[in-house]
Length: 163
Image 1 (cartoon, rainbow, N blue to C red):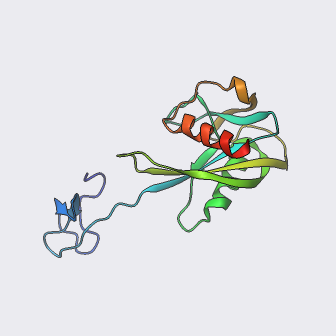
Image 2: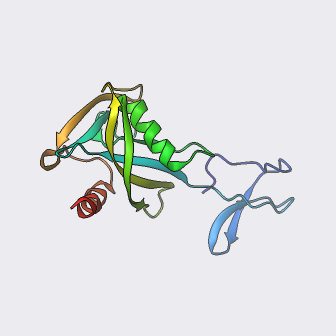
């Protein structure tokens, strides 16, 4: 559980671990400070043109070289919806408008929470961004093998919402 946090941010004493409210947490035996690690929030976007979904071939780990939905981390203080629009632009060069919220997805033991949206394009020119090897459209019934554990549930929920 310690991760990258080894010293107290208040008094610089070495941290220890102990159960606090049913969870083992880092705490400072010197000043009593408790470290609460925040989850990371990622925005995921299913961009749909009426027949096809936009995918990116990931240029970074995890799953580098695999096709996935455009996605990325929300910056601290950034509105999640703006992060979704920004990530699609950065990874594909396309401008989008969000249509609806699909859902929130998380897994036990995984610090990343996914906020998933559906969207349509409004402009731009498709080109892979700095953290994508390629960007391409795929027919909904011919999607490549998806790399992440929540992908099939996200697709199922999106299909249910878009009818």
